[in-house]
Length: 222
Image 1 (spheres, rainbow, N blue to C red):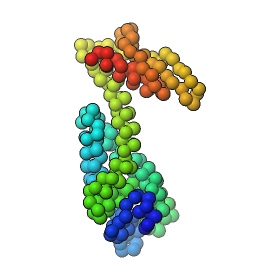
Image 2: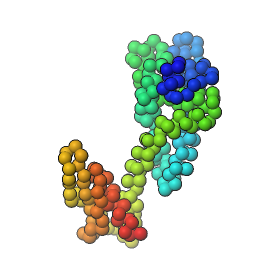
Image 3: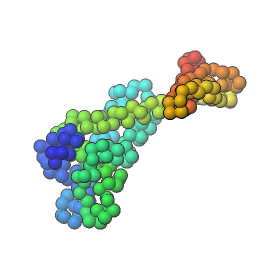
Image 4: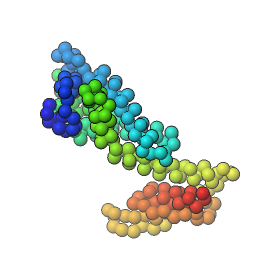
């Protein structure tokens, strides 16, 4: 247990909570133990609350719909599976004989559920502060990336909505320049509206360059 506590950077006073958090239903059924299902249920709610609170307080530029999209991106099986892999949870998850044959301890869904159960276990053992610390330390970077992406998407959407307030217009994004080696290219894009160039943008991908062009066009229009 010391190794996993070191991995997740939390030491339990009640070790049984951690044991339960790592116990899949298949193992619990075969060994008359409590499974992590109830902890998973609680952890899911705590995770949603903490991530929502963090987004609200740290990304005031995002609208409600954008915050919902970001939260859905980071509070999902794929994201939680990555956290489980980071902490090597598959080495500690207890599964039944049938699941062992199919390496159930490495299944993304089982590993993701285990992360939620651990969040609840930390909360029950030490309160909301260490649970919050665990969540934020593991989701801070994915949230940052997700907010950047949702922001990029929004620049093009907002520009389109603004330009079409008085009727239909033709909006085109063109890549006008590429520089640098294949593994580290920089692109320059322009946004053209009804044949008139509004703004240019630069980025490390074609998409990023287009988004920057949309952002600059919005700044000029505003």
